[in-house]
Length: 449
Image (cartoon, rainbow, N blue to C red; front, side, top):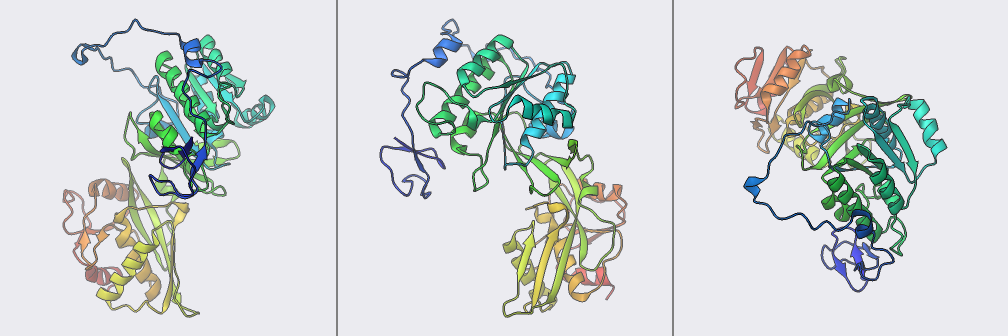
């Protein structure tokens, strides 16, 4: 049979285009697993046949609010929704070299320091390689155990006999079942191994972390096969050359998917970034620079916007944005030309968000327009000024979510002049707030003209 790696649909013949989702060159050949003709019935042998359980009335089920297990990394715990839940299965994806194995080795060591028995299973590296990394990261706890293998039956037997409290699998693509004839990393191997690891986690009440590779498109390999089988999906993002990394949840059955964790890669491993505003913010008042406020999950932090407007040297002006949607940039430039009579059609416009962060928050629109105007007029913005608001197509300034939280963060960092939309709610308790309703009011406020 053939299996689509994009949508998970099955077909009995190959085609260049998936008949279900329309993706090109996504059908991969695999064997159909029926269970009756396999060499070994792995699940029955390992777990037994427990038929003593009976269906219960949902109102009669007793529930105890178990304390979540804290890892000691507040950024990691916050992304999971408050900590590790017993029996949860977490898939951690990211590009090669981004720091997935480093992060999980440090978390394993931190849990081992807290008197938890941790089993780190590696199918890609030898004991000596991980030993060298553990020395560099200073991960030498007595409760941290390493086991290098790729055979699932062997690993499952070790887990059942050892009974660890946390298991790390690095990586799920390297694991294989001997009862399947396909190669490790194939569709059938991924699906079966993930299913059995999930069964171990639920029956033994052991949290299991699965490290997964990403494809060229930037998604976890075999996403539709694995993602629906696990409880939480985390993506470790960031440029390989950039020292700052972002851990983001795209699926979480035990918490919100809006939370992110910020880490900095050092020679001694990953460290938490407690104050992200200091990471993405510069106190220098330069031409073409403004400050806005982002909201990621439950946290607000300030970010610096840099713009450069220069006469176009060649025929067609360039529109380049780093960390911001280029289509949204074109929309904001059209708003500026229409409402402020500023001619940008013969100028190149370059936009950059400091720290290498990528955003989609509309609350940054007003600060982007201010940075573009500052560069075009070659005038610096007033010191300690924050701009917050979404800009509509007609130039109106619209309120954004959780304005109070953003204003509070700006006040904490010493910003004395805060420009927000006129219709923003619950901002009366703050002083030095300036409310505007149209972009035409922005120029006199910023440049006193």
